[in-house]
Image 1 (cartoon, rainbow, N blue to C red):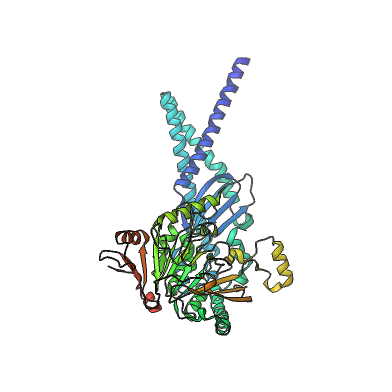
Image 2: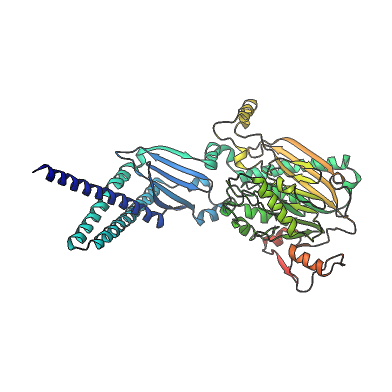
Length: 573
C-alpha cells in the first residue's frame, strides 16, 4: 500500500470517527432535551418529583425547592455521571394532614424501601426517555443527510450510524450514572437557604405554633403593662373615646405567628389589622399554604388590610400572592392588581395604599427611581380624592414621596421609626426565620451574643419583634400610638421589653374639620376611581353617598364565628 492509500485510509477513519463523535454529542443532547421537555414523574407517599437530566457532568442530584436547595454529590465510579435535577413537590395529602394536626414532620421521611422503589422507577423511565430522545435526534439528522445524497447505501448507513451513536450515548453516560448513583457512593449532602437553617436549629424551631401560643400569653402581659401605663401617664387626648383601633404589622416573612396576633386582636379590641407587606420570603403563594398563614389571617376575625412587599412576588408583575390573598374572606387588598386602587373606610377612618413593584431576589441599579415612579403613579391615581387618613406602602423611599391626612405607614426596614407623619413599622416576627437564626459561619454580632448568653446562641439579636397599635378618636384624628418591642420569642425565652405610648397630637396636630368617626359605622371598600368620579359629578356634596348602581364592598363586623362560617365580603348596591 502506497503512502497515498495510507493517507486516504487514515483520513477516512478520522472522518468516520468524527462523524461518530458528532452523532454521539447529538444523541446526548437529544436525550437531555427529551427529559427536559418530558421529565419523569416519581413519588413516595408524601412527596413527588419531576426528574430530568442536566447538561453537566458533576455526579450531582439537585433538588431545588421554594425554601432552599438540596444537593447530593456522589463519588464517581469511573467517569463523571450527568447531573440530575428534580422539581420536588409536597403532595396535597401532607398539607391536609398537617393542618388537622394528624401528622408530624418527622413522619414525612420516606423509608429505605419506599425511597429505593421511587428511585428505581424514576431511573428506568428516565433511561427510556433519554434513549428515545437520543435515537430520534440522530435518526432525523442522518436521514436529512441521506436525503441530500439519496442512495440506498446512504439510508442504510444513516440507520446504522444512528443506532451506534444512540447505543454509545446510552452506554457511556448511562453506565456512569448506573455505577455512580448508588446510596453507598454518596459523598456529600448539602442544603441551602432556609433548609440549612432548619437543619441546624431543629431544637429551636420545633413546635413553632406551640411557641406562638406561649408568646401570646407573654405579650398579653405586655399589653396589661401598657394599659396600666396609659391610665397612669396618658394625656386627656389619649383617653378620649376610640372610634377605631388598628394593629400595625409588617415583614412577617413566612412565620405563622397568628396565634399571637389573634391574642392581640382579641384583648386590645382591634378593629382591623394593617400589614405593610413582606408576608412571605420567596414570593410564592404556596409558601403561605404550607405554613398555614392564610388560615391564620382568616382566624383573626377582623379586616386585614394589605399591600404587597418585595418578598411577595417571584418575578416582575407577579400577582400570585395577591390572587391567593383575595381568596381569604377578611383580606382587603388596597391594590388588588397593578394600578387598581381601593380605599377602605373603617369606622369612618379612610385608608389607601399601593404595592411594591420589586420582587424576591431582584437586582437593580436604581431602586430609588422605581420607588419614585410608584409614588408618582399613586399621586396621579388619587388626584381628586380627598387625602386618606392613612396611606400604606412597603418601602420608605416611596412612603416619603406621598402624603396623608394623618399618617403614612411603611415597613421593609425591620425597625420602627417615627418622623413627623411618617411611621415605619418594625417586623412582627423579627424578620422571619432567616433573620432570627444564624447562618454559618456566625457573624461577629452573633458571636458576641453567643458569648454573652450561650442559651440563645442560635438566635440573632439584630431585629426585635415589633408591632404598633394606632388609635383614632371620634374626631377622626389620631389619639394615640402604642409601640411594643421584644426579643427571642421563637426560642421560648422572650426578653428586652419595650413599650412606649405616643400622644397622637404630636403626629397629627389638627383634627380634620367636619368629620365624625364612630365604632357604629360600617367597614367599606370602594374603588378609588369610582369615588373620584362621584365627587366630580357632585362637587358640592360633603358626604359622598353611593348611587343606586355603585358597587361598595361592605365587610361584616369583627365577629370571629361569622368569618369562620364563611360569611366573607358581601356586596351591597
